Image (cartoon, rainbow, N blue to C red; front, side):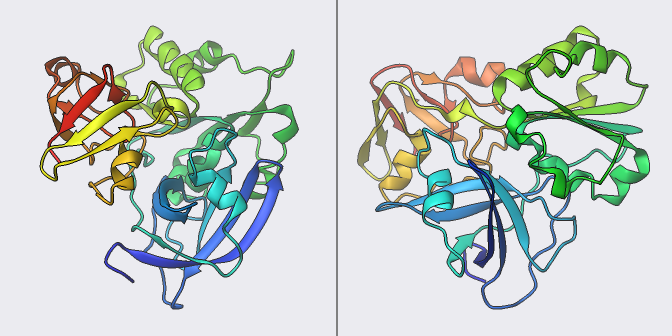
Length: 317
């Protein structure tokens, strides 16, 4: 172990589809790893061209595993470095640094039934859900929405012949009818959705329209929350440094480029760990953590996903 958490060695690499790579990582010194719960993720430090990229990926191995961590990473065409590093640079035997497992998306133990809706690579947290004893005891159903070409890609990690697993794609007779699915759920069901923003919003809107209690609806976003935008300048008041935030990088990535390492965990605008006081400028809030009041007051920003509405931000860093 190191100060930042773990040193992990790549012990298996498997290209399961043209844009999907599965990795297995074990402790570099042969020791057992910290156990992970269903829905956990790990923040990895990945080698880039002249810099290190820090990306979080869901663990797909069974809860409680201590021998290795397994992840599946999609190669994003407009990658800012993380997925490109996994697909183009990581090789068998490489050693990388990682933080300890964290969990912002666990299954709810009070649920009488677990309904999971996944969009593509958003299936990854649910692969561990379905191996969780509590989830299996309560009962579950998984609906995967994906490309037709990838409808069988995740089969090795799914229970063989499980009637509670359904796969949907964009073709007549195969699309998921979200409102109909939600309407037929028994009382006490908890709903989970993980995927790109369009799917998440469709599911959340349908649940709200049908009166699902907010306490029974859970989401995790994969995709474009941190997508780029107009370049701007970020000034770090305490350190006296400034950096130009490019159109294809996040504010957090630009800060890290200076050698400053603010606290972060999910890097997706959900956990709140990276919340930073905003001293000057107007933020374009893209997070799912700050309240409407926080955003209106304009005194806080989450640099992992949010940006500037104008030419300049001054941060209390």
